[in-house]
Image 1 (cartoon, one colour):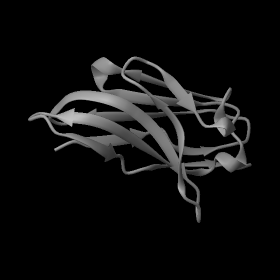
Image 2 (cartoon, helix red, strand yellow):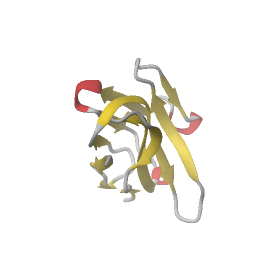
Image 3 (cartoon, one colour):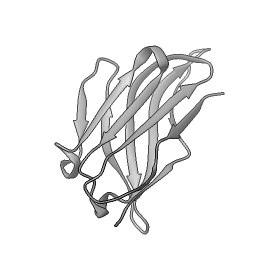
Image 4 (cartoon, rainbow, N blue to C red):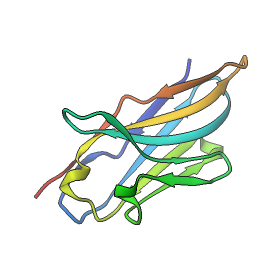
Length: 120
């Protein structure tokens, strides 16, 4: 059984920073793309950023220059460094991973979500 466990959410003032972490555990053979999504209240879940196993990154236009995604392949962990936070960044942030388990089955997994609130 595979689990994605997120941490690092919370309440921060506009202009502040937060760092989210997501660790994958279980019978994992390999992990391809890892990503962060977010869902604001009453809205759809949208991609924030993703990163391939080789380190290639992709960002939503709304977070370019403010957020940085990274990963530690040895720890099966993905991070999201969020700087210059704005009230519109308020959402539940979800970790996502395309991975192959052992025995080999490829599937997409989601974390439980962590709340990020940007407010003064």
